[in-house]
Image (cartoon, rainbow, N blue to C red):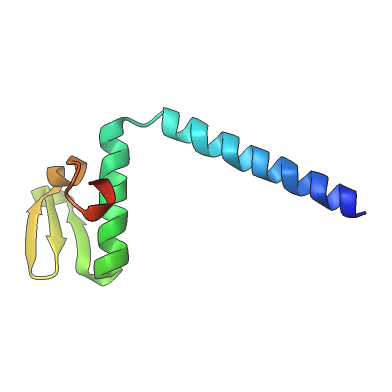
Length: 81
């Protein structure tokens, strides 16, 4: 039984690893950078403090904001430096 559980966990890990690598293969570097920057902002400022305003192409952060395109810039947050 232990061997079966170990084999199952190995298959799950292998599948997870394969899925992660293939899903990133379909994204541009720019998209990955934008997602990492947005993720960092949400985790560090809070979901209620970060908003994408699609109608104005703005990234709203609390009482301030910037162009949404800046999310694609490496170094916009510490996550992409």
